[in-house]
Length: 224
Image (cartoon, rainbow, N blue to C red):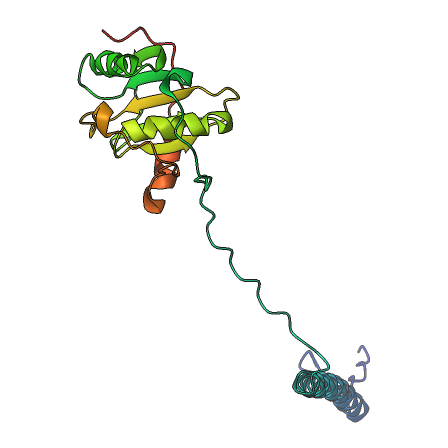
């Protein structure tokens, strides 16, 4: 008869039986792991506490420096007021025969540019271009010139009541009159004010929109 093998005390019904030394070793490993976690938490809490104390101390020192006048916080720069693009110069009335004038019609009224140009010719203005344009301007009329033509534009405005002055980049002294839908008539020649004065520019709440619509002078066919 075959001899029976002695049973392994560490195995019971095919399962490993934990011995006392193994159990103690496992418990000690668990205690070491818990202790490591606790140490890390203590270190983290200590670091956070030190940072908080440092921030509080810095805030107190900063407040004391401001109160004692040793540190000044720069004030916000004031927003500059809008600057008007309208010339502030006082202009003398310019003789009409010294003014080169172009007349444009931006309305739906046929022949308006030609008829107004004839009126300016009768007043001794030197009339050049006469044409129709699509200006998109809301008002009576635009009087447009470069810097060199501002004095002439002032005289033209005195003939066109309710007109608005605009400056463009031209270098010569020519002036454009762009007639709009609200145009009625020129000032009667005998009533034109010839005293010195300033150019009349659009109201501030209209200036931006109108400048965006300032027309580029076309190579249009002459108005009938």
